[in-house]
Length: 353
Image (cartoon, rainbow, N blue to C red; front, side):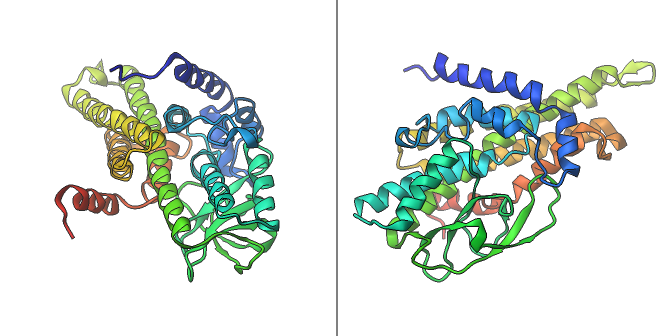
């Protein structure tokens, strides 16, 4: 058995890497931090040219109908450059959730305006013409809620899944350590016009969407960790102390190695989660939690170690490392805490309560 990505999958990654290196530099991310939208002008359009918004959308919606394996590579590239675009929320979670909800509603022979609205929304989302936000835990802030054309939201009272247009949402913007994510608390009124799926089927799809969020955030965090390690290596080569580059000091080398070990441990765990999701493995949820744990650990370890190498300059907002660290901290608290995922692993492996 060959455990490796195909040439086609690697080609998707390479195309994404080349585009992002040119159009999502540290200067672009810096500018996004102070912009009204918190995003890079024109970048979503360039991602659309590569088919990224519809990467997980079915062919009938003009999507690429690819899977989590390709998505893992794309998300790692997005993490490496710190892209502020909603690739996790829209591409990895909302689009496949909406597609699965439509399919489930069709199997149940549901019909009406809500389903037709959902089909149109998915086509627009896959084409990059509309933005989807997703809030699967009622009461928690929803990233990009103020910019989305529709939001996939769970009704706290019934657990049903609704597709809510922006006009029907009230969004109270929240403060985030990462100024590009722009989360908001949403209030809305469920009704028959927004109801997409209810009952056990809705619960199963939302649980799978949360798994995708855990996996996708882990893949993004791996990219962040990789870039922070690279920044540490580059800085250690040019920063001198006592007449020598600090990279020649054993203590500095150990910090970089510690970060590299955590990164190399996390990457294959994320890839396994991608394969498990794409192939429908029964332990996919477990693998997603493991990926989430390792992804957060890799990025947080890289942030700690590389910050120590940089010293005070690493804290300054003008320096690139600062942005990557804050993106790490914001994602570390999204899609379930590490402790929540550790408890899931404990229950799966040990039968712990």
